[in-house]
Amino acid sequence: MQKAVFLDRDGVVNIDYGYIGQIERFDIIKGTALALKKFKDMGYLTVLVTNQSGIARGKYTYSDFLKVTSFMQANLSLYDACFDGIYCCPHHENAYVEQYRVSCECRKPKPGMFYYAERDLKIDLHHSVMIGDHATDLFAARRAGISSLFLIGEHLKEESPLCPEAICYKTIGEVVEFIRKNQ
Image 1 (cartoon, helix red, strand yellow):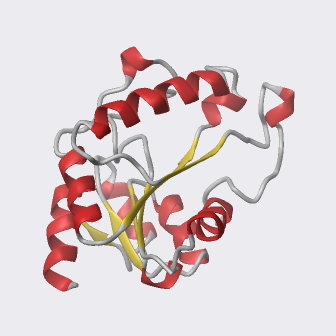
Image 2 (cartoon, rainbow, N blue to C red):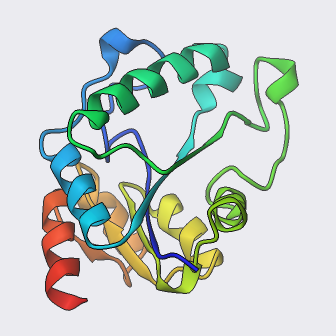
Image 3 (cartoon, rainbow, N blue to C red):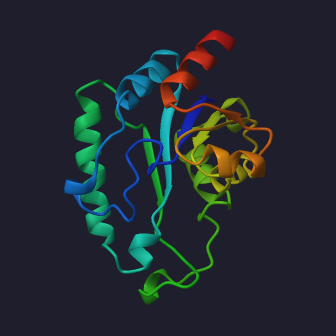
């Protein structure tokens, strides 16, 4: 079984401009590629787990998401930092696009995407880590059995009281250093 670092996308990996379905609006946060590479060098798989309600809301298509994902992976490949697994939930209970109007088990704060990754990549969830920018990211990870929870980004003031067991940092680079020192 392999340990993994799970990461949310918007606000963690890239700047969150809201409903990012076009390459032109996708900007990787400075230091992210290097941090992902360091996680890999420490023996972690890197796994993206992202709610993409913009698909369900008709803001962009699943195909658009795949194009942005390919663009992201191509950029990360320059640093040997590609994600080992990518899981997306395009669903929303109040979706505009009928095929995505589903009450699913994969939309965070539910843990479905973590279980899919566990099965597909042979991940040991107990020894894995979650990095998110919202408490719902961490709730999903906790429900899946992940106890190392990190909250980062622009929403710390509002989100940290919702998940008091989370360790809070401003950047993913700070999380890498914390884990490296405490392995």
